[in-house]
Image (cartoon, rainbow, N blue to C red):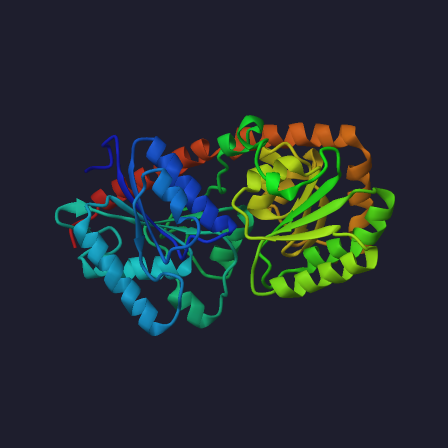
Length: 396
């Protein structure tokens, strides 16, 4: 298959398919590329999102891409090499550093280096970097760029160039944000879900969606603000969706506040796969990254708080600032405390007109800039440029 052919055989390689922004993006992108007529397959260590691929008819291959242990890396190279020899892929698209490193080694084992080919076919490696990775000397040697690099924001582009030493003169770097499947967040598709929450229809709800690993300051600050908010807004419920290595720390803080209030104001939901329904039920969402975009898609106002500090209410006058930092407050965030959050939480809980106007504006932004169908088209263009550049190289 040549770069000018209509459809491509694409392998997406990612660490795992459990709950998380990058993982959700891979599944969403795979489905969008398949809708465009491409043959898409996914390789990962597996996880709770794999059934979504199965329902879309997208094959998944278990390859241990989530571990840096030497024996796991060796098994991953062998597994991916075997897959590449079995399938006529036109493009391998690796998400994150370990899959990129493994994919580069596997492609070399089947006779493909950058710009190379095997079996008479060109097969470029495209890499996506979703966040700022460790950038010491060892990690730079462990990093692979492939034939084209995608980064999700200007902040990440600066990181891979300045800290990880990617050379834009040698490998093209394209900024393409993660995409949102708008159909998932349409009111008619999500309004009847999340019935297990048993919330009163008019009860005020604040939602926080996050991986509860290293960065739990936002969850703890929201829990700390719950007594004040509940006193002002009887019936308030704070939902915290997500799991991670520090889930128990957050759960204990929630239980202590609930004990003091004599009511389950804070509810720990753990891993959830009905995020669109949760977003629709909430009055507002406190999040960063993809979770912030999902709230916007659901027509809900967003407070940016999480990785890299507290950013405040997401509104039109600060959109470009937040976009450049992947919808975090990197470089300008304030400390995350209940006192920092309370004025913005109170403002949104009190002003229904503001919530509605910000919700409508956010949905328009996501539709115009972050629809996964638009994103998939841009990713496909990167694939085709990489194929064309590879075809101009002499056979290796």
